[in-house]
Length: 211
Image (tube, rainbow, N blue to C red):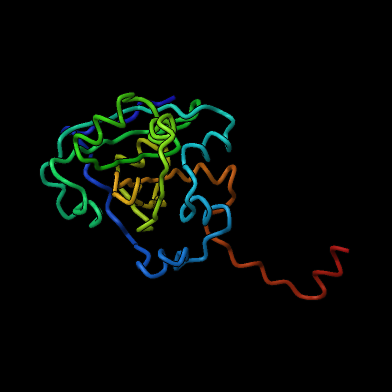
């Protein structure tokens, strides 16, 4: 297992979007591209990505915490939904690994008091921390993008661009956190290609030859 890169400061800058789905498409569980079914479920569904990774690989998800630090000025690189969180804010960045493979990178924004309440186990996936409290949660996917960054390529062991999404967790009608996730193309080993490929044109003679 290769070492993941170390950020030059306390946090990595959010990866640069190359393409973003429209809000209307995402709100209607559409991608605006020809995503295949398994990737559509991963990116636009409301299931837990860490549970998906564990189910796909058959291995537990290990969390490598890059940083959990105050973020006084999230700036333009943060999803707009972060403005709905009450200051002061904390930002958490992690790598998600199954066995030898690093399969995702994620960052999340929290009110600092809320983070202290729900993230007491630093190296535990967020869904495990929240499910341990039997909290009733609602996940709303707000954005879908293709992103790239040299450090992502190094950490995920693959060239980009990479599929990314961001969403909010709500608890009792209140926004709990905003989470951005970036997934490794290595997931195509289990899910197949992310985008449908045009079928190869054949003619009747070719079809008869294969019979």
